[in-house]
Image (tube, rainbow, N blue to C red; front, side, top):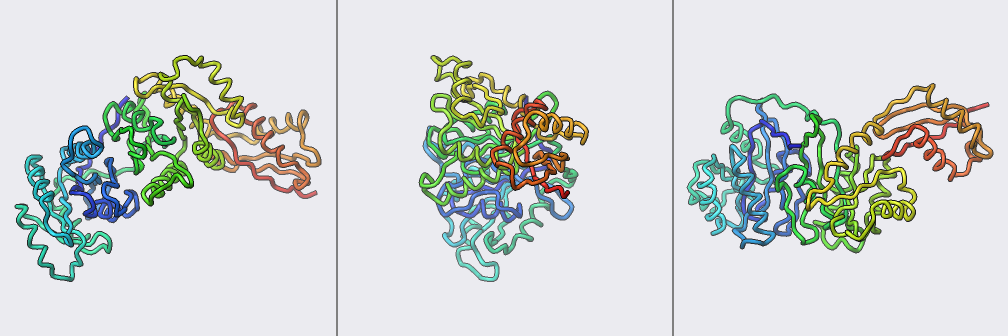
Length: 437
């Protein structure tokens, strides 16, 4: 198992906290991918995006604010992630705050960049390019040849910056193609259930910062992952929090990104703490997954802490307590010690195949004839069934007198459908169509 490397040259966006790195990243990416807040240290993990400008293709990476933090702190882990991004890059954009002027942290960080030995463009942010600022000249003391001023918020100077970037990159430009992954898999769960540890274990690297502090992961983090010659896109998400538990705008944006990651996914892996089970917050996200008919795999993580439990009994108790999840596969795992980490991924291919399945009208109506004979709805006549889409699975069921059918019957119908075709990990969207006499 491995994470494929991309050949596009990398441009790192770096600097101290709150200078506008994520705002610039989002401006260059032309999408709001990194969370932007006044709160210092909002960005922690590396966030990537592919860019094309004037016939040249490259990749940008947003980094956390560099703070020269003490060892064994969350901030020191952010600093290490920044250094990794710098070492990967072909070009570094040193972002500084034109309103605040030059700081000692800027100067210390500039010394760090000289040791990395990469090309550097100093980008003075938060300045209106039409205005003359006395503070702008201060940044020449950093000792780099190229200095540009921009306003990432208002988009001023962005074209000139992109021109400078492509001028400094290698002449050969790789053709930028769509990532050839089979499907997208999002890893979701409450804070501190082991999502980031799991992603790091799969990738065999510390791709995402892991800390016992709840809410460490804030942005969604994407990586391509290859297993058995097949490529999928993994998305790690922020911990699920609901309602009054969301205490800041950053947490609200993180939760919004998690919901968006679920909507964009083909298959969702829901991690929960095996010692606690699925709690209320997780159940609310399960409701979204089931409503959108995404593929779903359930993983009881931290199984190493539940040594006294018998797995067969645990499964039985789980499905008895939450019987509406009985069609969704359940695994035990320990991301920390590396036990069973590949099983959910291997299962995801089966779930995705179900999620993508195409049926002939004949086989659908063989099933329907069986239902009509054994368990027809009272008051409603079933006529015929056709597939209208997949990913998720969608069907039109033509009936007569649909208004007379009890609503609970269609949950039964879905269950019978999935059982008949031996399809686990997915649901179906069933649209009732009135067939005229």
